Image (cartoon, rainbow, N blue to C red; front, side, top):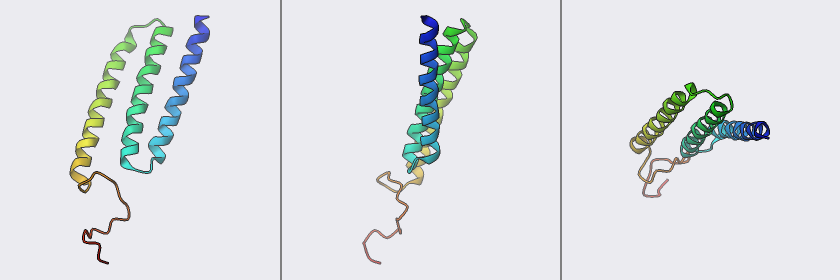
Length: 104
């Protein structure tokens, strides 16, 4: 019974990981890509945790700590980059002409 539960958990987390990678590649805005990156890291950590329990190995716990730390610092770095690069308001507008007064 537990074997079946491990297989279901790995399948669901693997599917969520693939969908996260799809959103990471196709996300229409930079903010969507940041959220997808965070979701991919979360799914990867969950998948490694389930596999670690399934294989009864404690080695992977250190890997979980490293990946979650890198994911956190990566997300913080993306947000700090966006704060300095995007115009005030935080939206990634591709049709922005740089004119604020509305004249053409």
